[in-house]
Image (cartoon, rainbow, N blue to C red; front, side):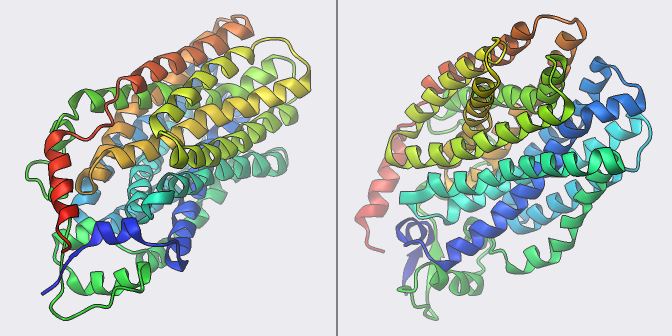
Length: 448
C-alpha cells in the first residue's frame, strides 16, 4: 500500500493546464468581488446627492458592507475548513451578487446599509477561501506569484467598476451599476461543478476517489492504484481546534502582528477606495477626472500585486512586504502635495500598488504562514480582524472630510497606518517552530 503525501505532490508539481483553469476560476471570482466592493466608492457622490446624505452618514453607509465583510471573513473562512471550500465559495458568490444587485433597488440610506451588510458577508468570505485554494494547489516555486496574479483580479474588478460607472451612472443613474452586479450569480452551478475541492478537506473526509481523480491532473507522473492511501504531513495533522492552533507552535505573537498588519493595510485600502473620488472632486477635479484616478489606483494595484508576488517568490516575502508598506506611507502622504497632474497620476498609481497591491501580497504571506489544515481559518481570522480597520476607515475619513481640513492632512491620516503595518510585519517570526521543523524533517526523510 502506498502512502501519498498530497501536499508534497502539489508543492513539487510543474505548472500545468490544471493550474491555469484553477487560476481562471479564482481570478474571475475575485474580479466580481472587486467590482462589488469598488462600486460603492464609484457611485458615492451620486448616492449622496440622490439620497441627501452628508459625508459622515455616507461613511456609515459604506462601512455597513465592511462590517459584513468582517463577519463573513471569519465565519465563512472558518466554516470552509469544515463543509468544504467550494460550497463556501459558491455561498459567498451568491451572497455578494444578489445583495449588491438588491442595493440598486433601495431608496433610503438605512435599507441600503442593510442590504450592503448582507452583500459584505459574501465579499469578505470569498477572499480567504480563494487565497487558501490557490495557495494549496500552486507549485511551491511560483506560489506567491500565482496568488497575487489571481488577486490582481480585484484591481480588474475595481477598474471595471470605474469604467461601467463612467459609462452608465450619468446616463442610467447610480442604480444601474449595482443591478449589473447580479449577473455573476448565474455562474454558481458552473463553479460548483468544475472547481476542485480542497485537498485537506478531501483527505480529512477520506474521499479517495476524488483525490485519485484530481492528483493525476496536477502531476501526470502519479498513476492511481486501488490500494493508495492519502495523507498530509505530521504538521498538518496536529490535533486541536483550528482557531486555537493559530496561536500554537510559537505562532501567537506572529498571528497578532499579522492581524495588525491586515488592520492597517485594509484601513488604507478602504480609505482610498471609498474617498479618493470625493477628495479629488473637492480638490477641484471633475467627476470624470476623479473616476480616472480610481482607474489609475486600481491599475497601479494590479502592477503592485503581480510585481510584489514576483519579488516574493525570488526574495524573502517578509522583506518585500516591509518595503511595500514603507512605500505606501510615502506615496499616500505625497498625494496631498500640490504637483502637476501627470505627477499626481503617478503618485495615485504608486499608492494603489503599495496599498491594494500590498494587501494582496499580505494575503499570500498569510497563506504561506499557516499550515494547510488551518489555512482558510488563519486567513479568515486575519482578514476578519483586519476588516475592523476597513470599517473604521470610511467613517474616520468621512469625519475628517466633514471638517473641511486641508487636503494634505486627510492623506497623512491615511498614510500613518502604513508605518504601523511596516513595524508589525518586522515582528512576525517566519521561522518554523522547532516541533514543526522536526515533523517536516521526518516527512522529508521518509520516501513514503
